[in-house]
Length: 185
Image 1: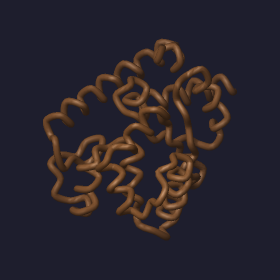
Image 2 (image 1 turned 135 degrees about the vertical axis):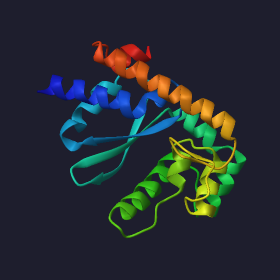
Image 3 (image 1 turned 180 degrees about the vertical axis):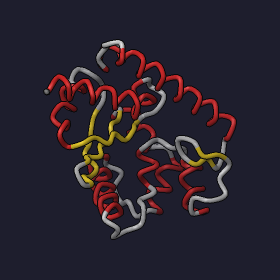
Image 4 (image 1 turned 45 degrees about the vertical axis):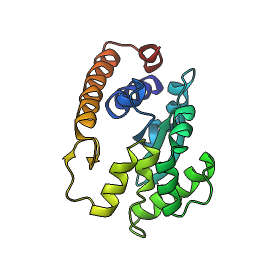
């Protein structure tokens, strides 16, 4: 059963997190049933990926998978820091940031709070797109793909194409029997 769960989990990681696995994104959400949660640490073992449980919602667990160094570098960008400050983040310590986002996201999922836009920053979305989403309340975007785009359309469309190719590649490799760790290596 554990082997079956692990195979299913790796398939889901290929589908949901290919841009991260391919090095195109610094983080991704992974939404899995709590029944396969134990296998996650096994799958990530020996890789450069970190995980943080953002929330439980019903029988699902929502994780942020990320590359620590890249995420920390992104969070140091001036526009990202400015936007986090506007969203009432006093500390830019990653652990504290993750804890607050987790609390806000859980409150949102239970209908007690608005969506925490800073989650877009943790996912590495360009600050211009996070700000645009906030200011336009999710409307008047240039394009909607992996996220809603408010600036740098041509560059982002090229990136979205790479995301799609990465997904195809990872799904194909996992279906062929390779583990996530083998494909990433």
